[in-house]
Image 1 (cartoon, rainbow, N blue to C red):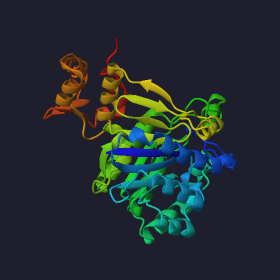
Image 2 (image 1 turned 135 degrees about the horizontal axis):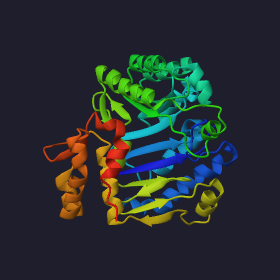
Image 3 (image 1 turned 90 degrees about the vertical axis):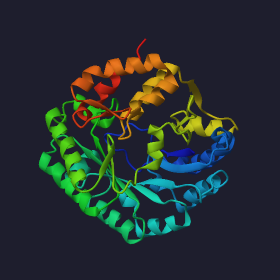
Image 4 (image 1 turned 180 degrees about the vertical axis):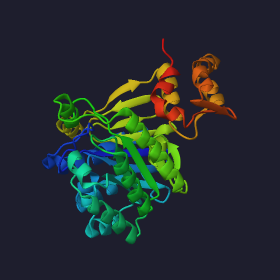
Length: 376
């Protein structure tokens, strides 16, 4: 089963922390949508005839598309997707775009899941992050979706903001849990090079959250959501009743996917294809009838390292027998040898042939996983 990702890079304004490719120049939008539809036809053979099980419209802010633009995209997708067999169609939305008219318009699309970029239920946090919505607006957007039948919702939260307190984070979690959404993603604030946030820190305008406090917030996140019935199925993701993000889960389990749009990535199990992070280069290439992507063939070593990284992120862990079958005895033994300090320290555990990161190890998961990487 394959997935399709469509990158919609347009935003009304830019958040201080965002390092995804995006643009506030909406004048390109019409040509861009047509280019995505054209690219799908140019590259449909890359799906290899596989049925499409998930579609994800990410951004940027896909909820800024007009009804006609969304309809155009889904009409094009209908040429390669059997909607009856496609289990999940996700659209990312900003809370202040979620109006009664917006929700009503979804009835004419295959969208059956919304991923809402809430980030915080604190107006002070939202102002700092330069989000467009208010805390009350976020709650009302979720409640509107639920009242109109769109209850397959995910919300994103961010913790570790400058000046954020543990009590403030607890209030965020309490509000999130009270809404009863089936899926919550939560991320520690990262100062990516070149973002407005990174520049603010470099100028001394903000100070990073203390690492110990950030870890306490992560601990609180895990405990609060577990107590509310959420399964911690991936480092940053929590779901009730196994309502996992199926499209994102496919990334972690190696399912091939086709990425369309500027800066989108594709992967067929061996080759990665990367579109240019430029509206002009992307649109003009596709309009001329050629694909815009560059190719990177994955080496055996990089595929092994990716298996370590993606498998250990999840509750399903690293299947050691499958690792042996796919990469050989030498790499399996290397993995086990490198894991020994973490197994003895309680950061990793092996059960029924599956290696997993433990609750103790999850706080240093990047270091744990990188120690298992193959290095020439």
